Length: 202
Image (tube, rainbow, N blue to C red):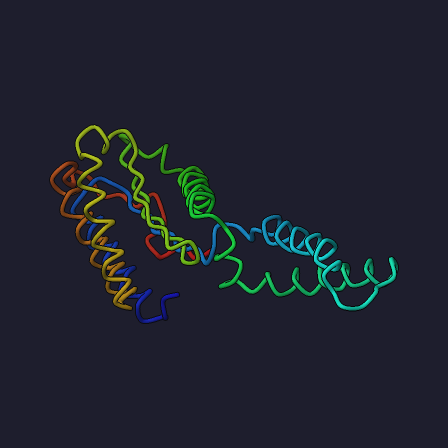
């Protein structure tokens, strides 16, 4: 996550960008888009059930009650172990991670009322840390003038910088690049500030 200095710099960048465009920009950084409790629990249950057929290969006899107890102990241990976030994310399929992050991005777009700005010029820059997911969502007024390829290029540059460990700079550069497109598509005609300029942390 970003430190206080990086967040202040990002806030100032958003203010500066919005002074040159009629668009409203909101940035959201989520630690993770879901707790994936159901997936880690299913993995723990599945591996615990595998214990029963494996017991027949043990060199000693185990009573039914002992086997049942061992399964429960294994399930509890695995369920707790799989709640460690780095391990949890390894268990979640990439398709599911991205689907949950994309779903949260769209909820944030609606919760911040980016769909109801004047002239439909709302823009959301959404990042979910655990899923390594970045998405830019533009409302109708911007989508009609700026291609998805332009947004995707900014996203790819963002990801490239983050992989180098420059998350704060990546955010600032992302906002600046978006600002260049916004200034061309929707140059400032009025003074406005409908939505928060600071980074929203989830």
